[in-house]
Every structure is written in C-alpha cells, then in structure tokens.
Length: 416
Ligand SMILES: *Cc1c(COP(=O)(O)O)cnc(C)c1O
Image 1 (cartoon, rainbow, N blue to C red):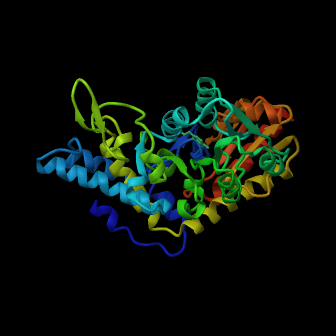
Image 2: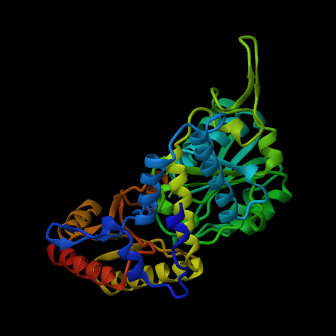
C-alpha cells in the first residue's frame, strides 16, 4: 500500500482538498451538484481506499492464514497489519483485543450471544438508553427473552440528552450489562460515556459502547474510556462495506465461547470434539472480507494524515450552521438539542412529512436521510413518526450548507 504512505501529512484541514479525493461526490443529481448529507448512514470512500481495494484484489489476493505460499502469506500480513492499525486507532492495549466483524451489528450480536447468553440469568438487568439504534436494542431483547434477565431503558430529556439522574438511579447490583451509544445517529446527542462507565464498574457490571458515530467524529481511546466492549462499522468511517470492529478487554474475550463455529476459529477438530483458538481468531469463523479489510487499513491511514480534532471541529461548525438556518426559518422544528452533540442535525416540518422534505431536497441534488433512523422507540418518545436528518462528514463544505438552506426555503415555500 505504498500509494497510501505517499500521502502528505496535512497541517491545516482543507475540506476542499479532501472533497477532491472522493470521486462519488463529483456528480450531478437532478441537474444540481450532489450535496451529500447522509454520511451518518454510510460515508463515501476516498480514492486511496478505492485504490487499496483494487490493488489488494489485483495484486495481493489469496485466502489468509495457514497459507504456505507467498501470495497467501502476503495477503495475511497485510490483513493482520490492519489489526495493528485498528489497535492504534482506538488505542487498545493489544491487537489481540481487536476482532474483525462485518459491522457494528455483528459486533453487538457477538457480545449479546457469547457474553450475554452465558453470563446473564433471571434477576439480572441489562440497561440501555432511549436513544439506541435498533442494533443496540434488539439483540438485548433477545438475550433478555432467552435468559430471563430484564431489559431496562434509561429515559432521555426533551432536549434529546440522556436523563442522567434517572440513568444513574437505575444502576444497582442487579445491573450486569450496560449497552450505550457514544453518539446518537438519530439526534447527534453525545453521552458522557466515561462517567457512565466509572459508575457502572462500581456496580461490577460491564459496558458495551456503540461507537458507530463517535469513531468518525471523535478520537477514541478505549483504555482511557475503560469500556469493556466497543463496536463500530468500517463503512461509516470511509472504509468498504463488510468491515467492522469489536474491541473487547482481553480477559473478557478469553472467558467467552465462540459466536460462530467453522474454519479459522479452531486449532484442532475431530468428529468428537474441537478445540478453539484464542481471541481474536476464536471469534472470526470463516473466510473474512480480505481485500475490504486491507482497504479499511487504507482508510485509517488516510485519516491518520489529518488532525482528527480539526476534522471534528469542521464537521460540528457545518452542523451548527445548518442548525442556525433551521432555527431562523418558520415551520421547522429541531429534534435533539442536547448541549453536548455532534455533527448530526435532525428536524421536522409543521406541514411536511419527513419524506416530503427528503423528496424536495433531492430535487435540489441534496441527499438527506428521512425516516426513523433505525430508532423507532426514540421516535415514539419524541412523538414523531420520522425526522429528516442531515449529517456532516470531513468532505462537506460551507457551500453544502448554503445549498441546504436554499433547499429548505423550497420546502417552506411548498408547504408553508
Ligand atoms: C449505523 C449504526 C449502527 C449499525 O451499524 P451497521 O453498520 O448497520 O452494523 C449501530 N449504531 C449506530 C449508532 C449507528 O449509527
């Protein structure tokens, strides 16, 4: 991946230069330049990632692990090198704590099944919050159903912030598992995860952090955070689909049974019994997405050429500018105004359904997500069926917010 290593380190963050490196952004939609404001659902990929994907398939492709021939060895080395890059990206203590998954959903299911099903029992409580993504609700519902544990949901305030008093009051010695998002994909709310984790650990429970959004918009340090598990998806982080990460503290991973059985995760198999690998391979049954993981490494290399705090500042500035526009216009209502929030803006209109907003904006070339954002219980709590959501990424520019404002004026004109 020498073409990655040649990228210069950029001292000052220049979103225009970044934008130039994302081919998919350079197209017209419905006669307008594309304004892509749906990166919270999935991000576009920079040329460096596309090149790395193509390069891996064209030059270094073979199945990984156990190959005695050079090509397989090369593919394995490049694949395993990404484990170290991920370790560094989230500052884990060891690369043995990094499990490749197909995405955050698989990571949460892995923990729910492997840890939840074996450690939880009747009388235990699983605590989540009202702003969780379905991926961090449904697996725990299933664990509760099968183990007899109780799933409890900490409420939010009208602002979309976590009701911290209620949350902390719900913690008790019955609490065994806490699964929380770091940053809400639907509202942008950022949770005080470090404070939560300290309190949960005092109760002797373990914490899983859903870092799908914070992995993009924040700089993660799992040792400082002291989370027990953390998951995120590669595709929201400018990497290919089918990549994702589960971080787990090694002593916990070591105590957990496999989630899926098959090749790669065993050391010895007879028809009578099988011996399992140590983590992380114990949790990586079957052939992984090899070239995609290698290109995931290229995405991390790409990000490492920037000051990531500068990226985060840039994204939040754009989102706050978009919020200002919405506040200045009649008919629109902001959903989610927690004091601590990231580059996601969720809103509704008094007379237009979220889908209508989405259709009008699309006619202007603007891509926003509309719907429940995989958070139906949250929508019910907010009393709306759906919202429109604009989310900002490193490649968005001030002109995108201006186009967004023009689009909103169209909505206002059509729906009053
Ligand atoms: C996207 C997202 C998920 C699910 O990620 P997948 O890539 O679909 O597995 C879970 N939680 C949050 C907060 C998300 O934004």
